[in-house]
Length: 306
Image (tube, rainbow, N blue to C red; front, side, top):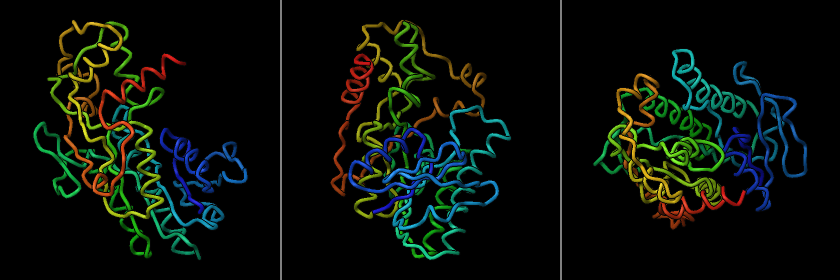
């Protein structure tokens, strides 16, 4: 099997590529930089330029599945121009692939797209499953809605579509976790806002496992890629502190201060969703880190080993 991965140099893409290759799959990936092209037996890069709707059609040779992870990070201040980049990076990249497949002979039968749990409205009490139809009335709700619409379009080409609504991915090196951990280890950790907002999270190992599971089993539809046990911001902060033998003595960081500092982007840390991976569990997917204690133990022990 040959799989094409966009965003293959990102946090999830790098690990997914390694796992696919270790399982005997061939990986093609798309890049905008010629210097980033590798041409190995099971790992080959191809050029594309989404802004010009250009892609090397050789990337699709023998490909049966596409994992679409490309998209600008939302963890950067949301200026008007950057908000446009967030949207365009998701819509335009999918459109380039769609346009190419529409014009060539290919073997692609499965399109797996990244998505986000931020499609669900913030809530401290409502448990969202894949059956939930509520959509957040904010920027991130709009982003995920158009993101998923771009993926659903591939159905018109007779291609099965899966959408992976991803929670906060926990990893030692990148993403949210190092930013949460650092002030705690420095002795100045504090809960954010009320501290009662839920973090629906997933360990990097498990999100990679979800993509591999959906890929290998040919699954389609929406899947919430989160661990079964969301955790409140205040609880997570205390759990990290206890592992480093630190006290949480500072008061919560006020919501108004975060809004002044981060602007509209403050929703990432002040709002939260209580999300269930019900559909994944029904397929018998097994999480390696189903609870936050297991995830933190692995993250911290790995950091200490390094």
